[in-house]
Amino acid sequence: MTDLTLWQLVERRANEAPGAPALLFGDARWSNAEFRERAARLAGGLRALGIGRGDVIAVQLPNIPEYLAAYAAICALGAVMQTIHMPYRRAELQALLAHSKANFFLCLSQFKDERPAAEARALNLAKVIALEDFPSTDFGQPADCTPDDRFLLLYTSGTTDNPKGVPLSYRGFLNNGRDAGPELEVGAEDVLLSAAPLTHLYGLFVYHVALSSGAAMSLLPAFTPPDLAATMAKHRATGIFAGPAHFKPMLDAGLLDKTDLSSVKFVCLSGSAVAPALAAAVEQKLQAQGKGRTIQLWGMSELQAGAYCRPRDSEDVRHGSAGAASQGTALRVVDDAGAPLPSNTEGRLQVKGPSVFAGYLDNPAATRDAFTPDGWFETGDTARLTLGGHLQLTGRVKEIINRGGVKYSPIDVEAILERVPGIARAALVPYADAVLGEKACVFIQPAADAPAPTLADLTCALDAAGIAKFKWPERLETIAAMPLTPTQKIMRGRLRALLK
Image (cartoon, rainbow, N blue to C red; front, side, top):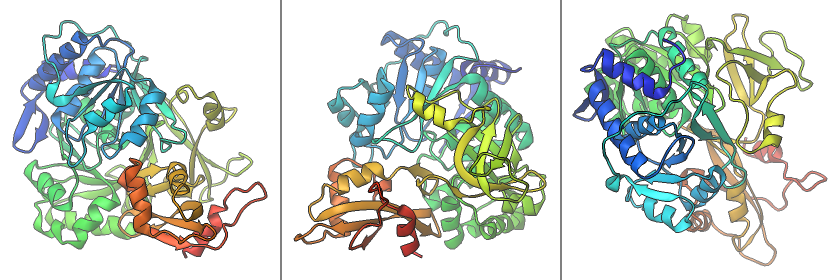
């Protein structure tokens, strides 16, 4: 069947294979029937609170069964789930909840040292529901949804400065996940594990593939190298979706030599640049215990999976590219004037296809800038396409920092740092890191007649402002005067050159 909503997929699995596993979490196992029942009761609780079709429900939860049950419950009501990453605090919540106009915010009362529910209530932007107090009751009938209804709201890298919301319909994303299953050779006997959070596009893609193909979903609450290794072995994962920052530490610690990898059919690496040597090293460990292979994937919030390797691809393709376009997707590389470039020539990457979103939420200017007159989406990446049509990513057009696959704009961080005593100007630029791909270095121009702050001073200021820790700079450089354009914009390229 095609063009189903997410709730229809949940019900189909519960009807066709009620006893088959839907979720694996530690020692717990939720069958398809049990998942449907728990999600339905959550939907009943949401309906009792007045939530219905078209309402936006912001969700900030880790990779736990209740996250996916809440996702299904929101869809059953015809509402829209807005994802909120776990590290986000009040500075990010303020911008994202105000922009989305979310009706409700579902979160935890306590998470590590943070109190998400209390922080969200202080903002007074949406009604806060703590998961521990979440109502559960009889559901009744699902909303009469169509495949073209919105069901998901993601946000791109901009948060407190200029967040860009990406509203998505069932048809584009769920069909993209459905079509990926056969291409990745995923079936009902498989167990898929995402090391990425389910609040991120990558993690959601894995769930969409699992849901459509009948595979079970293995949940890793939070990443550490030992926990990922243990979960892979415990749940006998067959398809693992992760990033270089997940697997390099496991290689360095020798964990893959100590982990049972015999069930693994493939490891998919994505989110940041993948060194061919790393892809080869992971595959060598897989091959030592079975027949597993390393593949790669490229995607964006605006389109989900745009390209991926197939397990049957040659080693050169799997280790040296993000593979060929996903079904129905077209890729092209153009020069600065928009003219298509020949194979193996670097330029701006553009994409077109049925999973590409229609436009940013309440941001017509950004939407106009994102699409060419003939309907191609400007990805902001630079790339090459090989003669065989395989995508080789080479960089980014915009100055976005990509730390371990999590991309963010430095503008909001800089705005806070420039308020720190002793700083005249501040700019964050990325520098290469063997594990995370990139980290942030902050260049500061000291204020006159004031002592320059230390890196600890800067991180304290960001902590006080409620900025997520992954955005904090991890290196400090002092510069006498910022290189500026005639319009007084900082020339970030020159700063990056100073780090080489």
